[in-house]
Structures are given as C-alpha cells and as structure tokens.
Amino acid sequence: MRLAIKRRASSGQRPGPDGERAWDMEKARPQWGNPLQFVFACISYAVGLGNVWRFPYLCQMYGGGSFLVPYVIMLIVEGMPLLYLELAVGQRMRQGSIGAWRTISPYLSGVGVASVVVSFFLSMYYNVINAWGFWYLFHSFQDPLPWSVCPLNGNRTGYDEECEKASSTQYFWYRKTLNISPSIQENGGVQWEPALCLTLAWLVVYLCILRGTESTGKVVYFTASMPYCVLIIYLVRGLTLHGATNGLMYMFTPKMEQLANPKAWINAATQIFFSLGLGFGSLIAFASYNEPSNNCQKHAIIVSIINSSTSIFASIVTFSIYGFKATFNYENCLNKVILLLTNSFDLEDGFLTANNLEEVKDYLASTYPSKYSDVFPHIRNCSLESELNTAVQGTGLAFIVYTEAIKNMEVSQLWSVLYFFMLLMLGMGSMLGNTAAILTPLTDSKVISSYLPKEAISGLVCLINCAIGMVFTMEAGNYWFDIFNDYAATLSLLLIVLVETIAVCYVYGLKRFESDLQAMTGRSLNWYWKAMWAFVSPVLIISLFVFYLSDYILTGTLQYQAWDATQGQLVTKDYPPHALAVIGLLVASSTMCIPLVALGTFIRNRLKRGGSSPVA
Image (cartoon, rainbow, N blue to C red; front, side, top):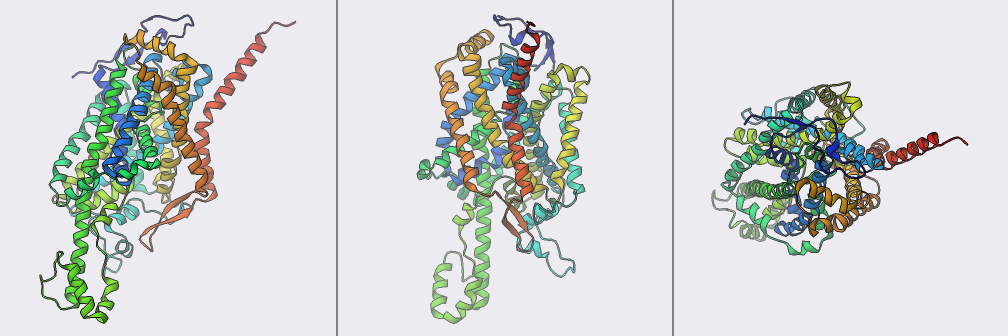
C-alpha cells in the first residue's frame, strides 16, 4: 500500500469563546496515511519487551493463573481509561506533549517538559537493549552457539574457572557481552564491540524516524506484526518440547491465596501502567497526527486488549520453554546423581533409574552407612518444583534463561536467530514511540523548526542519545543501566499521569472536554470513562505513588546486584554516594519540571502585569 502523508490546515470546528481550539492551529500538520497506521504505531510502541520478560515473571511470582484476576481488573479501571485520556488529549490538541498541556493551561507546560525528560532518559538506556540484541543476533550464526559451552582456560588444560563456577550462558552474558566490573565504582573503559552495536541500533532508529510519520508509518507495519509471527512459531515449537506441559501447568495452576497479597494487585497495576507506555508523551504525539474525527475511544480499547492479550500469549510461549528448561535441568541433575551412585557402589548399569532412585538411596544409606556418608555431600538435591520456582525477569530472562533453553534445542542457531530478531522488533517498535515523544514537541516548536529541518532535529536527538548511551557500554555500564531502569521513570510517570488526569477533569473541565470529544468524533462520553477519569484512576495512581515512595523510604540504603567473578554469581552491595546522587537527580530532574515551570510561568505573568500597569 502506498503511503500518502496528508498535510492539512485546521478545519476550524466549533471554536470556543476562549479561542483555544487546537484545530485553529495555522500551520499544516502531517497526518497518518490511514487509521490503521496509527493503531499499528500504538501497538508497536505499547507491545514491548515488558510483555515478554516482565509479565511472565509476575505470573510466576504471584500465583500463576490467579494473577490474571487483578491484572484484568486493573486493565479495566486503569489501563483503558488512561490510554483513552492520552489519545483524546493528543487528538484534541493536535500538538506534542508540551504544546498540548500548555493549551490546557500555561501553568501545565511542565507536564509536557517532564514527559520529554523521562522519554529522553528512557531512550538513552533502552536502545542499549537493542544493541545487546544485535550482539546476540550476530553470534547466533555460529556453530556451536558461543554460549553453549565454556571456553578453555589459558593453559588449555580445562574450562575457564569463572565459567565453571557459573554457567556457559551466564559467562557469555557477564564476561563476553558486558565484560562487567566487580562494582559500580570501577567504571572501566568503553567496550568497543557493544559500542559499535549501540551505534548500529541508533542508526537503525534514525532511518526509521528520518521522515517523521511518513517513514514511521511504513516501519510500524513490520515492527508491530513480525513479533507475533515469531511468537506463533515459538509457540508451536515450545508446545512440542519435552517438559513444556510442566511449565504450562505451573503457569495456569492458580494459587488463590495470592489474591489476598497486596503486592499482587500493586504489581498488576504497575504492569498495566508501564506496559501501555502512559505518561511518556508518545501516545499524545501519535494521536496528534490523527484526523480530528478519528474514533480514538475504539482504538484505545483495541490497543489495550491487544497489549494485554500479547502479555498472556507471550507467557504461554515463555512457560512452555521454561518448562522444557526446568525439566532438562531436573533430568540432568538426576542423571548425575544416578551416575555418582552407580560408580560409587558398583551398581549394575541401568539398575538405578529416576523411578527407584529414592528407594535405592534409602537402601544404600541403611546398608552401607559409612560409605554413603562419604558420598552424601556430593549428592545434589534434584527438584522439578525448585527449578520452576526460579523466578527471573528482565535481562536475566532474555539473555540467560532463554539462551540456556535455546542451546539445548535442535537446530539451535535457527531458534536463536528468530528469538533475538523478535527482541529487536519489540525494542525498535518501542524506540519509535520514545523518540516520537521527544521529537514531536521539538518539531512543533516554531523556534527550533525555523532553524533546523526535521531530519536534522532527528539526527541531533539520535546523536546526543547515542553519545550519552556510551556510558552503558563501559565495564560498569550494566550497573548504570539498572539505575536508569529502576529509578528514571517510576515515580515520575506516576506523578505525570496523576497531574494529567487532574488537569483534564478539574482544570480544563470534564464537561468541557466531553463537549470537545463529542464535537470531534460525534460520540458522547459515557459514565464509565467519566467515573474512571474523575475518581477511580486518580485514587489508584495516588495509591501506587504512596506505595513506591514509602517502599523507597523503608528500604533504607539502596542496593544493587554486582557480579562476583571469583564466585561465579551475583552478590548484593550498597550503592556508593555518587550513585545515590545520580538516582536523586534522575527522580528530581523530571518531577521538578512540573512545579518549576508552573512557578516560572506565574513569575513571568506577574512581571508582565507589573510592566504593563499604568504609572501613577
């Protein structure tokens, strides 16, 4: 389908008495070629890595199938209403986040600025995941896969000591990919291989956003649909793997007692909130390129349902593979115990099996107590349940657990290529939304756009992000990545979306906004949306904000997981003072935009009034 980018002046529908109608903008604005492009852009942005590596972890932690109960409820009372709110604001105001909130009230410009700052932070570190994806994708063409076996030591007399103490997949991640330092205080130098991959990732992003909606509109068809093709292929493969049913039974077996756990509900609300990408300004930016008559309510429902359905679908795929990995490790553990006992007690080959192992162990312990006591310290305790209970999320799931399962599959190179290609599509789709949240307010600015074309603005944003992102390719880069991932957005986004709902309902006015939507789309706003916006969603956001704030305070000294090469495992350490200062700056730099810009606007208005008052 040929993409036709439409540029239209405002249609001038129903200008209000205050003259602030968004469709009165004089300059022409690009638009999506068709509504499907907009939907695909929202899906590509919302459906991201969190659906693959965060939601399955939450299911594992909070009761399997029973976690779906709070998840669906939070989708209805939080996800859909807030997504519709942001899409409606963007479509109504027809500007990026800064201009949209300035139109509602000049004192709210800081909300848009805060969204841009958070999106800038996110873009800085998020594309590093795509760089790691490229790194693993390139190595997926090797036979055998480089993370499938431990390398030999310097003397070539055995395997590398660090790898033996950890595992081949952990070694490849922490040593070959990150070359991680022992602590955040030892920064080390920039690793040239990850740096090149990061440069490539930003080059791909730049090519995708080069021409604004014209190029993005084409790319989103691919980035939104391709991950589903790979997930379907993986589902078929996963269901045929030995032990897949163990993983699926673990996922779908509900633990109803978890419904009484407040953290299950808090994490369900948080997952919905961040999975949809609320508060970043990306959804407002995408919706601002819509036709004013577009049915954004229908699109909000579609995107919400597809996003949540994808999380559940991805969990089925993940748990089928997780069951295969757990069963493989469990049976491997049993085989080692059987081999140990067979050799230690000169048992006949084939006599000892998994079925009679416990019975024979009891017999050997009672018949040969002294000899069994010597062997006992070397007997591992094998448990399928404990293997399934090992909860991992984030990069640990994507680059360690998945790769461990892939290396044991037949034709492992093919499955590795498919998997990391899917991760790249998910990551790139989210990056298009992140960069749109930054670029749309910049290109909307008459000051900036009058001096620089949008191609130059896009290039500068990508170049600055890439240069700063090199911090994450240093030996301590993964520790700084965790800091940005944990603290750059959580509290800030909650505050941003809270102010957004208050601004629409109580500053701009819910009745006024309702009449605007009816004028744009010809559809009235029913009681459900009004009740969610005016009361339920704000109360829920305040509850989440209080929880996270109190959690940070009660935690005391913030800590992080550092890699200890001598032990081959992660150890817990306290953040040093300079890292704590960076955490404070990350939180403050975005949240303080809202009151500081409001204060600056107030002072400027007072000065204008003072300067224009008649002299007595």
